[in-house]
Amino acid sequence: MKIAHLSTFWPIGYGLSLYTDLLIAGMRAHRPQRHTILAEIGSAPAQTEAYECIPCYRRDEDYVEHIVAAAQVARPDVLIVQYAPDLFGHDNRLPRLLARLRELGVRPVVNAHSVYPENWRTGYRPGRSAAAFDRAVAEHAALITVHSPRMKHDLITRGVAPDLIAVVPHGSRILPEGDVGASRAQLQIPRDAKVVLFFGFLWLGKGIEFLLDVFRGVLRQVPDAFLLVGGHTRHRRWSFYVSYLRVRAALLGISRRCRFWGGFIPQDLVPTVYATADVVAMPYRQDYSSVSGVMHETAGMGKLMVCSRIAKFDEVELNIDRALTAEPHDREAWIATTVRLLRDEEWARQMKQKIRCFAEQTSWENVGKLHLDLYQRLIEGQS
Image (cartoon, rainbow, N blue to C red):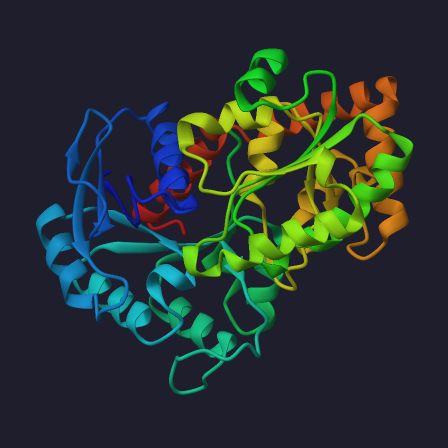
């Protein structure tokens, strides 16, 4: 079984580069063959024992025939499309690509990382909606994989056949918690603080302004609390948003116990940033179904978490503990949960045990095996 991936890849530092890398490692733990990555231009050409990376398309062009030409050379049995709208668009290109790949005898699998509200406006014609786009993708895909039952449900309600959709969890990278003292010293974080971490790209849908307000309440009960906002806006031209957050922190009177990272965190520094944290906060606001890579990273490093009670964190409610979630606008609930995690050592220990158990269940090795089993059945005509 020859497997290829259609994705962005290193040194482009988006989440899909890391996802693709870790998924390949997870699959190779069971079937150690070399994978092919048909990557967007800007990714580095590479040949390693694990993969060959072939840059072949640009996201802002009509990429269909460029990818088809690369697939004709690579000749995979299965091509996994790591779908995100900023990478492949919400228009007619992806359905056309899937149809062309089927003509070549390639089985295209669309790994959908989010399912958007069915009436969301898109560039797909006819229909101009997310529902019309999803139905067009389903018409030509050999299989669609999603990360949660809610995502599957949302696709079914807009007319996608249930048998075409498989639920496979996002993977968790199992890492040691790291040396807290050394990490804080390296990043100049107060050594004895109770550190709350926000990690990832900064934008309005992440609820960071709300988190600043929550942290002010936490600080009143836990005077040694410290907030680290790790990450930056996806594009530098939006950096005024970070400046606004700094001003808001000053107006709230928490600047002395707050730090904004101010830039993209390189991958080799990510474990160090997580190691500084006592609790990772995810006060997101997204009104669509998906899961959180940051949550899985947090779980894999055995860190405590508090998350919004929204579709994105269904896994936390169902598979870890509902007590680690709070309604996205309930300031008092967020303060109470965060303070309890920081101060109640026995409860924190119990929650950590549950988080570690979830991480082991969703390890990349386990997730890689689930993917391989699906693709084997697909080739054998059982899916």
